Structures are given as structure tokens and as C-alpha cells.
Amino acid sequence: MYVPGHLDPHAVEEVQISSLSTGGSPRLAGEDLAHVQTLVASQAQLPPIIVHRPTMRVVDGMHRLLAAKLQGHQKIAVRFFDGPEEDAFVLAVKSNIAHGLPLSLADRKHAAERVIVSHPQWSDRMIASVTGISARTVAEIRKTAAPASTSGRIGLDGRIRSTDVTEGRRLAQELITKDPALSLRQVAQAAGISPETVRDVKKRLSRGEDPLPRRSKQLGTQLTQRPRSPAPPSAAVLERLRADPALRFNENGRDLLRLLNAHTLRAEDWNKLAESVPPHSVESVARLARDTARKWLEFASLIERNNLKR
Image 1 (cartoon, rainbow, N blue to C red):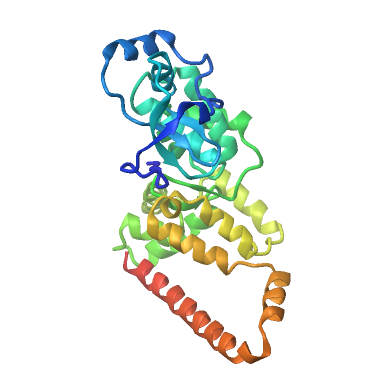
Image 2: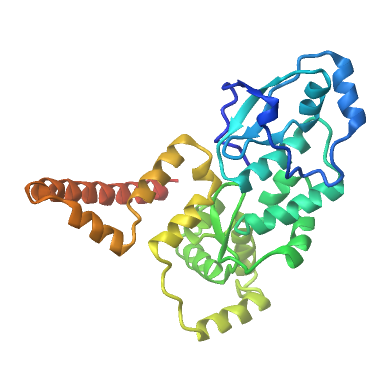
């Protein structure tokens, strides 16, 4: 489930209404004036609206903002969202299917189309969870709305799974054959596929069938005839990690991304840094660099060990 980690639920500020921007709403037909009048007539204290801090655009609460204007208020209570604009739109959609005046089906389908384009690495179920439509509908929209396909998609559990499960099925077959006592979850994690796919592999093996469906088998044959692409560079790997909600939307995950970002530089940038070190500091900087490298190696071993325990 999408959880906006850059939104502090307790930090509320009063801001000038005139400083806010109101474009980019997921409501195709705009706001419902009858609903605005209902809010004005209620005289109730309304929750703070959500605003994207970098652009000052209203993410959630347009009806509340219009009600405040009609009541003659100059300021309004705001909670700030500090993520990218693409995530601000996702939050707007998610907020408007969770409370207030719900988005129409047309609004939600249009929103799904935008999210597919801005977050192509998200699975159909992931996008369905934030737009309030079915995963099957998202899949249909993706056929016409999606850009170039990605090599993997991020699921509701935050894990990245390949869109081609051929190799995953083959690896699952090997694991099940070697140790039939392994759970579906253990095999799924090791093979990079879903537990349901592992279940299907187990059923096929129990019936003496090939673990690869006909289509996957044909695709696997085509793939083996192509030269393997080189591993993506560090920058590409980091970009994929930045898109992972399991990292982006919790404090420790964001700390890790910042550290990884600081150490993912182009060769020319490393050269510039090296040239900036004065002669009298070379030994100290080199020692710290080696210490940092050792700590990263220890960290790599630690996360691999932790993964084996899961």
C-alpha cells in the first residue's frame, strides 16, 4: 500500500491563501460547488489541507480551500508534502479516494493513466491500490498508456519483480527440487517471483509438467538467443532504488538512499574530488576512504545475511 512518507501528520502551518497554487487536480470536471457550500454551511473546523511545498500547489483539500475563501479567510492550515511532483499527484489521488468527495470513475481511470506514465515500474496492483480501480482495469489502461516497458515492477510489498518470470520459474524449480520443504515465500524471495508463481511451479512439477507455460518457454528460448545486456551502471541501479516505496517512504530507507546517492558519482566527479585534496591531507582522506569502503563491504555482507534469514 502506498504510504506518503514525506508528509508529517503532526506538522501544521498557517499559510496565506494567496500564496497557494491550484492547478493539476485529478478532478477532470473541477470542484463541486455544492460540496463547497455544504462545507461552508457546516461551520465545522475542517482538517488542514495538503500542499506540495516546492510548488505550493494544493495536493488535497481544494473544496476546503474554496470554502475558506468564501468565508473570507486570509490564511488556512496546511500540512506540507516534500516529495517529487509525480508523487504529489499520487498522494492527491490516494487522498481523494480515501475521504471527502470521492473521485469519479473517469477521474480514477485518468489518474491511473498518469501514474502508469510517471511510475511505469509500479505493478498493476500497486497502481490499483492508489487509484481505487481494479488491477485488471489498470492492466488494460497500461496497454495504451505505458511508455517503453521496464525490466521489473514494484509490488505492494515493495519488492521488485521481473516482468519476465522465465528465469525465476527455472530457479524456483531448482530450489524446490533440492529442498521440497522450502516455503512458498522462501522460494519466491530467492527466485525473485511471486509466491503465487511458485505455487504454480510446484503444481506443475507435481503433475510432471514443465514449470514454464508454453508462452514463457517460447520467450525464454528467444531470450537465450539474444546476447545478454551488460549490468546497469550504478546510477541506473540507484534510480530504480529511488522508485522503491519500501525505501522512499520510511526514514531509514531515505537515509540509505542519501548515502548511496553521495557515493554514486561519475568518474570525472571522483577525479575532481581527488584533485581537490591538498597534499597534507592525502593520507588522512585515503585512510577514511578505505575505512568507508570496508564499512560498505560489511554492510553488503550484513544485508545479504539478513535476507537469507527471512
